[in-house]
Length: 434
Image 1: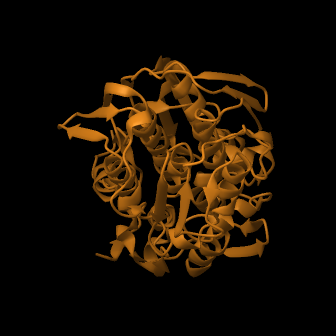
Image 2 (image 1 turned 30 degrees about the vertical axis):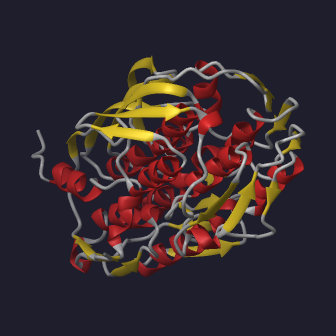
């Protein structure tokens, strides 16, 4: 059901908040353990529409899940005993599900059919289908979902080459297929995408060697189920980081947030803008670096976001654009053409959201220039994009009080990655300053 939500401008945000489990790691904890024969427990798994799409697809292949209040138990016969799905594998809105599971499907001795919702059907899929075809899989000649993959003939070749885009989804797809290929694979990244797949599979016994931009995969290793404690999602924490950083008097503490260096671009960008961000209690949890993140409000300045930083902060660009809207001096975002093929065209939709709230935005093919101004309440469209809906909420908090509240259309999109977002927003707004 699509709903609209109205957000009034707010004063300082204060309090401690546990953000939901990391979405990327949650997907991989489900998929990697499904490939192994046996049982594993996952605590802190993100309970969202996207992760449930992954679970639904894996169930069709014969994987069982037992859910309790604090954990999910994965019971799998192992990838070698997967059965053909009785129906289409519906990935909903989840690009992670459809791309990562495509790599798994390439190593299965039957045909798998994939589809998703209207948004997912617009996203490019040749970037995974072509590498899988080069490894020997028989694939549908389609640019987008729906499509099919048939691994009946086996993967006679490994992958050897550089990826066309720096994408953890594409890389992970190929890594999953490479585990079942008849030859070794060598994957070269054009930029530093997130490495959760390599970390998790290595801990489970896969033969994966990472050296700089190159990932070498030796097929045939037996995987051992691995219990996973999922850290808090830095992409979810990013909304509160920006909300606190741009509001004088705010202080938010978020414990147990994943701070994998491939994911901390949002922190680096905010610090370059002058944000007061502290990482304390650093440690390692299930092979991933975590820390408690403390953010205090202050004054921000404009910056430039480009190059490798875009890869490390791609999902956070919409909310970073909101920070830019209230900073001192213009902000330029370059090298971000990949934003155009996300859940929405996030260059166009982020620009539209800020423009609707009174901010001057110049849009480019690969980014935008944001000239800060006074945010004003009004009506904005999330375009059904979960990150746009949450970014708009953060902007609404800092709008001119005299302009009134901001109504966010299709606000229920947050269910994709952060179902408790509106509840957490209310909690932070209603804590008295001390």
